[in-house]
Image (cartoon, rainbow, N blue to C red; front, side, top):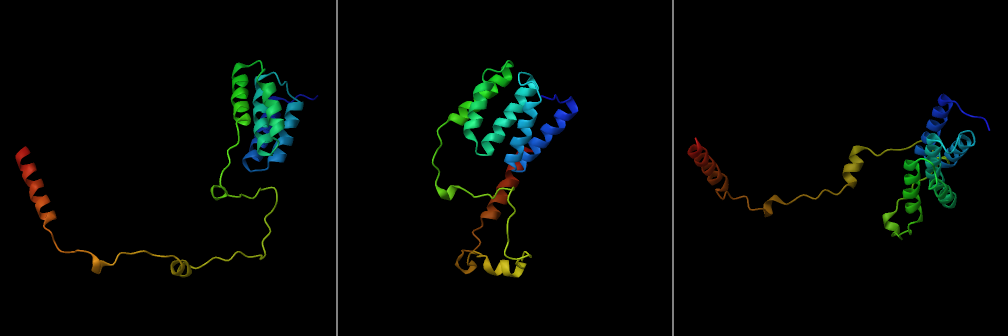
Amino acid sequence: MTTLNQEQFQFKSQVGRDLLERGQYHLSVQVFEEITESIDLSSRLGGEVQIWLVTAYQAAGRLQDAIVLCQTLTCHPYSDIKKRGQEILYILRAPKLKRPKEWMIKIPTLEVPIKRDSKYVSTKSMYQLQKESVIISEDLSQMNTKDNYFLGIALVFLILVLCINF
């Protein structure tokens, strides 16, 4: 077990978090596992890395590994790490709700490049977009546009109120 100095730890953990944020979950798991092999897991930093590893496990679809690691975190010497481990474990063990397919959006992973049929991406002109869009407008001939004196009455009332107050 080689130990990391503070600078190496900061660098590697930032790389792991960046990979996680970019959707490269399996690489993030690898980085966090490497860090856990070279750091004292009972330290505060060790607990933080394990929390990140739980997140990476869950994102990578390794739910059972995330649950097992959370169970070990519930016995961590630092109370804040222990509490976070318990909270995450509660969430991981919660029953999964069934959602209609209409509620879901399929987002491709960033690890696999998206293949396109064409080398070029075509865009539609503004004219084509306007032509395709449906514009709903009201027919002004059907509206009652006769003056009903409301604006005049409201203006006189406002002037009277202002004059009485001054």
